Image (cartoon, rainbow, N blue to C red; front, side, top):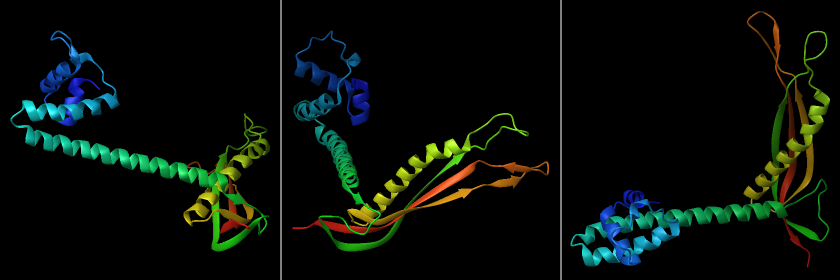
Length: 216
């Protein structure tokens, strides 16, 4: 950030801030500080120093310090919130990565201490229709497209399943299975014919959310 940007952001006088920096950094008067780009950490450090400068060099420092401290307090709270959100996100990612799932109803070496109920995770994908043959000019290999897509939508459905278990405070899912739906949508067009829409393939991952603990 440059001096003008810093001044606008913190509601301070740019010329005062420039004078403070010259004194703080022992710079000569001909140095063009307005063109210097300060790093974020340096900006906050100099703002703290500028507060002391105001107290000894500005007779109206009390009101200015009040505004400045309010701005710094909002920045501090925003940083704390961002840090807390980042930590919560990392904690969730670790929990999801370590969550156990099984198509069975138990885990070797673990005991189930809580059942939280049935959960599911869903995902779907559209695949363009084949456009080759008597009526069309370009082909889509629907079978290959479906094969390529199934892995992706199963993984995303399982991810949703894990997140549903996490939201219930669970660390495992038992009895996991998959349901599949294939849709062949079509609609009437303005010419009285039929418009065939892309195929839709859906997958649902089902299971029971549980809390497990290692056997002693």
